[in-house]
Length: 322
Image (cartoon, rainbow, N blue to C red; front, side, top):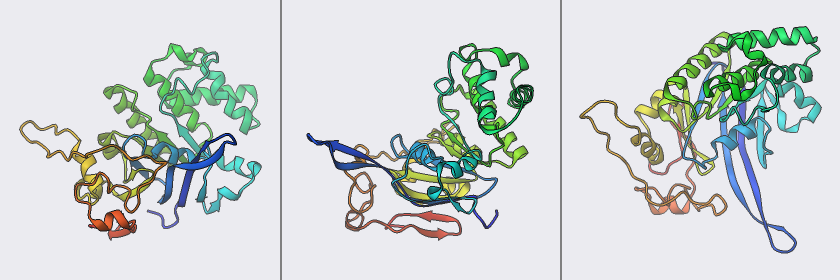
């Protein structure tokens, strides 16, 4: 793994104001992403897991600039992209792309697929019309589609084919970093396997770096090199895939992993059931954010926020009890 990270995030915050009263003044904030720090290296896949509402998707969107950050810094290839002008940022946006969860919602239903894919070249390149079409046909072939698909509309494709179109659009400008936001969650299991295989082939061919956001721990284990566990907008554990799945340290990570079904008949996994609901991100708990649901929480967990520390090489956790 290279020593210089491709992407470095420090104390990233994404807050949404809650306004009220006659003057619509800001009363409080929803802390969707709260003081997240991480490093992503070239050619690796970082899996991001956690319950719905934990801030996974907001983290990915903030990294790409689709959501405005409220604090912290984002460095891409050694440059602080948070301090760049819109014009300066344009060349970096070509190098960072996203594959969305719902490919149909991200496509114009009245626009043929060929023209939709050509738009990116109209904006970012000086290609001729003939060159643009040729490049789109090459992209369609690379993701497993045919040249006949060029003149079809989004409703004429299956879910798996639409996601291939989404992948082709993300690959159009040869990016370095691709954020996959629940890219296979809406697909059948057999189609999921095909899309994951395609993503891995493209990664090997183009030296891509993935941020793979998913709630499916089985998929994350298969595709990821490292795994980041999020809870209530903050990070609770980070390590290699083997460290997280074979030696989880945080109680929340253990509870998540205990929910994975055992495929072997007769062998059961002891399920760790978390009591209560996920706290509101607008009314952030004191101390450790997980203490309200943690089965082993102590008084120290309720009073002080745990430090983010390394428990073994490359394995980090935020827990007083580890």
